[in-house]
Length: 166
Image (cartoon, rainbow, N blue to C red; front, side):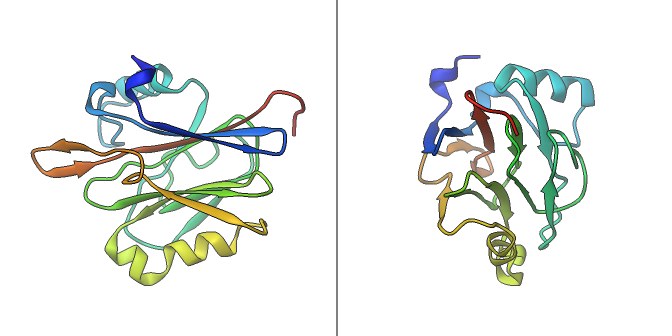
């Protein structure tokens, strides 16, 4: 995989680095309904680490990830963590992927379809973040790629701390 082709944004939060990446069609399909072994292979090629990717249902369920990989394949529309080396991911078709980065290093990924957005999935996620300030990034700010069905983005968040461990 050519990492230069995947749009990314990097935030420095204290001693931490938060990287937000958006896959392209060249990276393959990350939908959970596909063959599990193939999905895990694509994940490892795109971003090594232990992933949490939810089975999104257009709701408001926010799951807190207390260790990398917790809640992988679980049902929900937002994942939040303050753990280092955790990879959070969301797959979207025509919904909006939103990444949230708190000033304390807390990160979240939100699958914001119109039903979930209307029901308050973004507000529910921000309310569970302990940060004083939260920066929101929608992948339309980075880049979307076109498919026959429209625009598709897949967000990926990863927090790393090189100097200390949590």
